[in-house]
Amino acid sequence: MARQEVGGPVWLAFGLKERGLFVESTRKGSVVSRANSIGSTSASSVPNTDDEDSDYHQESYKESYKDRRRRAHTQAEQKRRDAIKRGYDDLQTIVPTCQQQDFSIGSQKLSKAIVLQKTIDYIQFLHKEKKKQEEEVSTLRKDVMALKIMKVNYEQIVKAHQDNPHEGEDQVSDQVKFNVFQGIMDSLFQSFNASISVASFQELSACVFSWIEEHCKPQTLREIVIGVLHQLKNQLY
Image 1 (cartoon, one colour):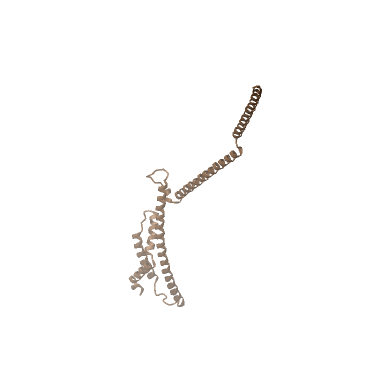
Image 2: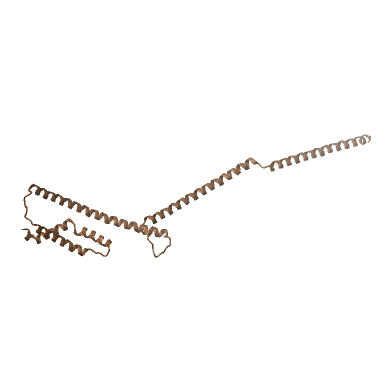
Protein backbone atom coordinates (compact mmCIF):
# COMPACT_ATOMS: atom_id res chain seq x y z
CA MET A 1 0.00 0.00 0.00
CA ALA A 2 2.81 2.34 0.78
CA ARG A 3 4.36 1.49 -2.60
CA GLN A 4 1.23 2.43 -4.37
CA GLU A 5 1.01 5.71 -2.53
CA VAL A 6 4.61 6.50 -3.44
CA GLY A 7 4.17 5.58 -7.17
CA GLY A 8 0.83 7.37 -7.62
CA PRO A 9 2.11 10.94 -7.50
CA VAL A 10 5.08 10.02 -9.67
CA TRP A 11 2.87 8.69 -12.44
CA LEU A 12 0.60 11.64 -12.06
CA ALA A 13 3.49 14.04 -12.46
CA PHE A 14 4.76 12.11 -15.47
CA GLY A 15 1.32 12.22 -17.06
CA LEU A 16 1.01 15.92 -16.54
CA LYS A 17 4.44 16.44 -18.05
CA GLU A 18 3.56 14.36 -21.10
CA ARG A 19 0.31 16.25 -21.48
CA GLY A 20 2.11 19.56 -21.27
CA LEU A 21 4.52 18.48 -23.99
CA PHE A 22 1.60 17.42 -26.20
CA VAL A 23 -0.19 20.73 -25.67
CA GLU A 24 3.00 22.67 -26.38
CA SER A 25 3.65 20.63 -29.49
CA THR A 26 0.08 21.15 -30.64
CA ARG A 27 0.35 24.90 -30.04
CA LYS A 28 3.60 25.13 -31.96
CA GLY A 29 2.13 23.14 -34.81
CA SER A 30 -0.86 25.43 -34.89
CA VAL A 31 1.40 28.47 -34.98
CA VAL A 32 3.50 27.00 -37.77
CA SER A 33 0.38 26.04 -39.70
CA ARG A 34 -1.03 29.53 -39.27
CA ALA A 35 2.23 31.08 -40.39
CA ASN A 36 2.31 28.87 -43.45
CA SER A 37 -1.29 29.76 -44.19
CA ILE A 38 -0.57 33.46 -43.84
CA GLY A 39 2.51 33.12 -46.04
CA SER A 40 0.57 31.23 -48.63
CA THR A 41 -2.21 33.81 -48.55
CA SER A 42 0.29 36.64 -48.79
CA ALA A 43 2.07 34.94 -51.65
CA SER A 44 -1.18 34.36 -53.49
CA SER A 45 -2.24 37.97 -52.96
CA VAL A 46 0.93 39.32 -54.59
CA PRO A 47 0.08 40.03 -58.30
CA ASN A 48 1.92 38.08 -60.99
CA THR A 49 3.25 41.10 -62.84
CA ASP A 50 4.94 39.15 -65.68
CA ASP A 51 1.78 37.28 -66.71
CA GLU A 52 -0.40 40.35 -66.41
CA ASP A 53 2.04 42.45 -68.44
CA SER A 54 2.08 39.77 -71.13
CA ASP A 55 -1.72 39.62 -71.21
CA TYR A 56 -1.92 43.41 -71.32
CA HIS A 57 0.48 43.62 -74.26
CA GLN A 58 -1.43 40.90 -76.12
CA GLU A 59 -4.73 42.70 -75.58
CA SER A 60 -3.14 45.98 -76.66
CA TYR A 61 -1.76 44.32 -79.81
CA LYS A 62 -5.12 42.81 -80.63
CA GLU A 63 -6.87 46.13 -80.17
CA SER A 64 -4.20 47.91 -82.21
CA TYR A 65 -4.47 45.31 -85.03
CA LYS A 66 -8.24 45.66 -85.11
CA ASP A 67 -7.95 49.43 -85.17
CA ARG A 68 -5.47 49.27 -88.04
CA ARG A 69 -7.69 46.92 -90.02
CA ARG A 70 -10.72 49.10 -89.38
CA ARG A 71 -8.78 52.21 -90.37
CA ALA A 72 -7.44 50.55 -93.53
CA HIS A 73 -10.94 49.38 -94.48
CA THR A 74 -12.33 52.86 -93.91
CA GLN A 75 -9.60 54.43 -96.05
CA ALA A 76 -10.12 51.90 -98.85
CA GLU A 77 -13.87 52.51 -98.81
CA GLN A 78 -13.31 56.27 -98.89
CA LYS A 79 -10.94 55.92 -101.85
CA ARG A 80 -13.51 53.81 -103.69
CA ARG A 81 -16.23 56.39 -103.11
CA ASP A 82 -13.91 59.21 -104.18
CA ALA A 83 -13.06 57.33 -107.38
CA ILE A 84 -16.75 56.81 -108.17
CA LYS A 85 -17.49 60.48 -107.50
CA ARG A 86 -14.61 61.58 -109.77
CA GLY A 87 -15.96 59.25 -112.46
CA TYR A 88 -19.40 60.84 -112.32
CA ASP A 89 -17.86 64.32 -112.31
CA ASP A 90 -15.80 63.43 -115.40
CA LEU A 91 -18.90 62.11 -117.16
CA GLN A 92 -20.75 65.36 -116.46
CA THR A 93 -17.78 67.26 -117.90
CA ILE A 94 -17.31 65.08 -120.99
CA VAL A 95 -20.91 64.32 -122.00
CA PRO A 96 -22.41 67.44 -123.63
CA THR A 97 -25.99 66.54 -122.74
CA CYS A 98 -25.08 66.50 -119.04
CA GLN A 99 -24.00 70.14 -119.32
CA GLN A 100 -27.27 71.28 -120.88
CA GLN A 101 -29.86 72.56 -118.46
CA ASP A 102 -32.88 70.32 -118.04
CA PHE A 103 -35.87 72.53 -117.24
CA SER A 104 -37.77 69.58 -115.79
CA ILE A 105 -35.35 69.38 -112.86
CA GLY A 106 -34.44 73.06 -112.72
CA SER A 107 -31.11 73.96 -111.16
CA GLN A 108 -30.89 70.78 -109.09
CA LYS A 109 -27.78 68.66 -109.29
CA LEU A 110 -28.07 65.76 -111.70
CA SER A 111 -28.53 62.43 -110.00
CA LYS A 112 -26.27 59.50 -110.78
CA ALA A 113 -29.09 57.71 -112.60
CA ILE A 114 -29.66 60.71 -114.89
CA VAL A 115 -25.92 61.05 -115.57
CA LEU A 116 -25.70 57.38 -116.54
CA GLN A 117 -28.80 57.57 -118.76
CA LYS A 118 -27.53 60.68 -120.55
CA THR A 119 -24.16 59.00 -121.01
CA ILE A 120 -25.79 55.90 -122.53
CA ASP A 121 -27.89 58.06 -124.88
CA TYR A 122 -24.81 60.01 -125.96
CA ILE A 123 -22.83 56.80 -126.63
CA GLN A 124 -25.68 55.48 -128.77
CA PHE A 125 -25.72 58.79 -130.66
CA LEU A 126 -21.97 58.52 -131.26
CA HIS A 127 -22.38 54.98 -132.60
CA LYS A 128 -25.01 56.19 -135.08
CA GLU A 129 -22.81 59.11 -136.14
CA LYS A 130 -19.86 56.76 -136.57
CA LYS A 131 -21.89 54.47 -138.80
CA LYS A 132 -23.12 57.43 -140.83
CA GLN A 133 -19.60 58.78 -141.26
CA GLU A 134 -18.33 55.36 -142.31
CA GLU A 135 -20.99 55.28 -145.03
CA GLU A 136 -19.98 58.77 -146.15
CA VAL A 137 -16.33 57.74 -146.23
CA SER A 138 -17.23 54.74 -148.37
CA THR A 139 -19.13 57.01 -150.77
CA LEU A 140 -16.24 59.47 -150.94
CA ARG A 141 -13.81 56.66 -151.70
CA LYS A 142 -15.97 55.60 -154.62
CA ASP A 143 -16.07 59.21 -155.82
CA VAL A 144 -12.29 59.46 -155.53
CA MET A 145 -11.92 56.29 -157.58
CA ALA A 146 -14.24 57.72 -160.25
CA LEU A 147 -12.32 61.01 -160.29
CA LYS A 148 -9.05 59.14 -160.69
CA ILE A 149 -10.49 57.34 -163.71
CA MET A 150 -11.65 60.66 -165.16
CA LYS A 151 -8.24 62.16 -164.48
CA VAL A 152 -6.52 59.38 -166.39
CA ASN A 153 -8.91 59.85 -169.31
CA TYR A 154 -8.39 63.61 -169.38
CA GLU A 155 -4.63 63.17 -169.21
CA GLN A 156 -4.84 60.92 -172.24
CA ILE A 157 -6.93 63.52 -174.05
CA VAL A 158 -4.45 66.28 -173.17
CA LYS A 159 -1.56 64.14 -174.31
CA ALA A 160 -3.30 63.43 -177.60
CA HIS A 161 -3.84 67.16 -178.18
CA GLN A 162 -0.22 67.88 -177.31
CA ASP A 163 0.93 65.34 -179.86
CA ASN A 164 -1.30 66.98 -182.52
CA PRO A 165 -1.57 70.66 -181.46
CA HIS A 166 -3.20 71.86 -184.73
CA GLU A 167 -5.80 69.12 -184.98
CA GLY A 168 -9.32 70.45 -184.48
CA GLU A 169 -8.11 74.03 -184.17
CA ASP A 170 -10.81 76.69 -184.63
CA GLN A 171 -13.50 74.06 -185.00
CA VAL A 172 -15.50 75.27 -181.94
CA SER A 173 -16.17 78.96 -181.45
CA ASP A 174 -16.12 80.76 -178.13
CA GLN A 175 -19.86 81.32 -178.39
CA VAL A 176 -20.51 77.61 -178.65
CA LYS A 177 -18.25 76.98 -175.67
CA PHE A 178 -20.14 79.61 -173.70
CA ASN A 179 -23.47 78.05 -174.68
CA VAL A 180 -22.27 74.66 -173.45
CA PHE A 181 -21.10 76.18 -170.19
CA GLN A 182 -24.36 78.09 -169.80
CA GLY A 183 -26.42 74.95 -170.40
CA ILE A 184 -24.47 73.05 -167.76
CA MET A 185 -24.80 75.87 -165.22
CA ASP A 186 -28.52 76.29 -165.89
CA SER A 187 -29.10 72.60 -165.27
CA LEU A 188 -27.09 72.72 -162.05
CA PHE A 189 -28.84 75.87 -160.89
CA GLN A 190 -32.25 74.27 -161.26
CA SER A 191 -31.33 71.48 -158.85
CA PHE A 192 -29.47 73.96 -156.62
CA ASN A 193 -32.46 76.30 -156.39
CA ALA A 194 -34.77 73.40 -155.54
CA SER A 195 -32.50 72.07 -152.80
CA ILE A 196 -31.23 75.18 -151.01
CA SER A 197 -32.80 76.97 -148.05
CA VAL A 198 -31.49 80.35 -146.91
CA ALA A 199 -33.36 80.58 -143.61
CA SER A 200 -30.05 80.65 -141.74
CA PHE A 201 -26.37 80.37 -142.50
CA GLN A 202 -26.19 77.00 -140.78
CA GLU A 203 -29.10 75.67 -142.82
CA LEU A 204 -27.62 77.13 -146.02
CA SER A 205 -24.28 75.44 -145.37
CA ALA A 206 -25.96 72.12 -144.69
CA CYS A 207 -28.04 72.39 -147.87
CA VAL A 208 -25.00 73.27 -150.00
CA PHE A 209 -23.06 70.27 -148.78
CA SER A 210 -26.06 68.02 -149.32
CA TRP A 211 -26.59 69.41 -152.84
CA ILE A 212 -22.94 68.89 -153.77
CA GLU A 213 -23.00 65.31 -152.51
CA GLU A 214 -26.19 64.52 -154.42
CA HIS A 215 -26.03 66.54 -157.67
CA CYS A 216 -22.30 67.04 -158.29
CA LYS A 217 -21.25 63.44 -158.46
CA PRO A 218 -19.12 62.53 -161.49
CA GLN A 219 -21.85 60.36 -162.96
CA THR A 220 -24.47 63.10 -162.50
CA LEU A 221 -22.23 65.76 -164.07
CA ARG A 222 -21.49 63.42 -166.97
CA GLU A 223 -25.20 62.97 -167.63
CA ILE A 224 -25.75 66.76 -167.49
CA VAL A 225 -22.91 67.44 -169.94
CA ILE A 226 -24.13 64.78 -172.34
CA GLY A 227 -27.65 66.21 -172.17
CA VAL A 228 -26.40 69.74 -172.90
CA LEU A 229 -24.26 68.54 -175.80
CA HIS A 230 -27.26 66.76 -177.30
CA GLN A 231 -29.23 69.98 -177.08
CA LEU A 232 -26.44 71.99 -178.74
CA LYS A 233 -25.33 69.39 -181.29
CA ASN A 234 -26.61 71.51 -184.17
CA GLN A 235 -24.26 74.33 -183.09
CA LEU A 236 -21.30 71.99 -182.74
CA TYR A 237 -21.44 70.57 -186.28
